[in-house]
Image (cartoon, rainbow, N blue to C red):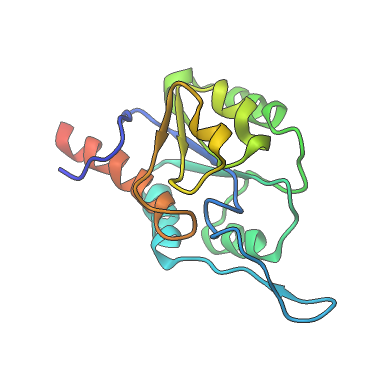
Length: 167
């Protein structure tokens, strides 16, 4: 069984930051009005697998980006929140919207603006190359994969492996 994280098969909602989870935190500036961010197909496949297995995926990002719009459109994600500096009220709204228990929610974040949300959930995940303050959260779990290189997929694979093991 593929297992690198201590999770639950009961997780119904993954709430994730975007930059530093789906991307490697790099921005390629093309000119004054254009920029690019690199996404991994591993992570995009992770979103696809999650959705196909009934796991809702929500994104709460401090930035506005066309890359987030692309992922949301590709997978018909309805819970996309961009330009959000204080993320926990959105997380609380999602918990109420889906009537979820704490053990059914997982939050993924990598930087100081995610700490409050990471501290408020049972399943808190970050990436290997996250900010050191995030990695100091007592119950944080760290993926083997780095940001933008399969970390989201690793999380989803762990949940699916648990579900398959229960069959």
